[in-house]
Amino acid sequence: MRIGLVGFGVGGRLFHLPYLQAATEWELAGVVARSPQRVAELAAEAPGVPAFASLDAIIDAGVDAVVITTPPATRRELVLRALQRGVHVVADKPFAPDAATARELIAAADRAGRTLTVFHNRRWDTDLVTLRSVLDSGRLGRVWRADFALEQDDRSVLAQGPDEGLLRDLGAHVVDQLAQLFGPVARVDAHLDWVGAGDARVDVGFVLGLHHAGGVHSSVSSSKGARREDRRMIVYGREGNYESHMSDVQVEQLRAGLRPATDADAWGVEAPERWGVLHDGSGPTPIPSLRGDYTEFYRDLHRAIATGTPPAVRLSEALHTVAVLDAARESAISGTRVEVAATPGS
Picture (cartoon, rainbow, N blue to C red):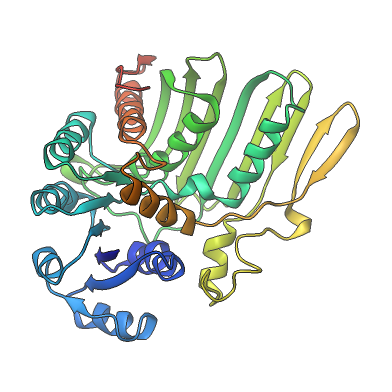
C-alpha cells in the first residue's frame, strides 16, 4: 500500500518518517513539505521521495492512506478533507481539541467507510512494554496505584494558543498509556501550570489524579520549562512494586543517527544500568528491557486495512482519552473533581 506524510516538522521527521521507512509493508509515496528548508531536509532524510505542495496533490498522486502531522489547529480540516477524498487516515495526537470535535471526525470516518486512527505511538515505548510484561506476570498481585512522570527541560517547543498546551500534547500520550494499563478513567482531579493570558494562555505543566473505573488510582505529572528532567513509572501492588526510570530511548537513538530500518538489532532496547527493578518477597530483581518499536503502529495499521479489522488504536479509545483531557481542564479551572463523560466502548 502507498502512504503519504502530510507535514515535515519535528513530528514528521522524528516520529513518523523513520518508522514508515522501517515498515516495509508500506511504500512512502511522498511528503507534503512546502518550505525550502523542509524540502531540503526531506531530500537528505529520504532521497528520491517526492515533496508535494498540498494534501490534495499527494492524494492525486495515488495513495491508500495519509498521515496528518501538521499543527493541531490545522488537523481537523485536513482529516475531514482526506476522508472526503476516500483515503484512510492517521491523525497525530492530540486527536482533537475536545470530545465534540473527536466525535465529528469519527462520524466522518464512518460515513466515508475508511479507517481512521490516532498516532498513540507511545504504547510501544520501551519502558511501557516492559512494564506491561511485569503486570502480565502477576508478580505485583492486585495493583493499587501508579505514579508516572514525564518532566522535560525543553522550552523550545512551548507553543502558545488555544489549541496548544502540554496537557493535549504529552498528556494525550500518558493518559492513553494509563488507560491501556488500568482501564477507563471515571474521575479526574487536575492542576495545570499556566503562562500567558487571553488567547495566548497555555498550560506548560500538569498534575493529574486519575480514578480508574476498575479501582486503580494513577497520578501523572509533566512539565516543560521548569528546568527538570525526570521520567518514571512506579506501580504499587499487594505483593510489591516496580520502579522504572528508563530514558526515551528511541528518540535518543534517532538523535544519535540510528534508524529502526538499519539498526534493528539495537533498536528500542534500554541499557542494563537503566533497567527497571521489581521489589517483591524475593528481593529486588532487575527486569531486562524489552524492545520498544513505534514501527509496530504502522505494521498494525497495514494489517487492519488489509483485513478490514480495527487497528490497535481504536477510535473509542482515542475519544476516551480526549474526554479525560476535557475533564482535566474542567477540573483545573473549577478546582473540583470531574466525572469523565461516557464514551462508546470505554
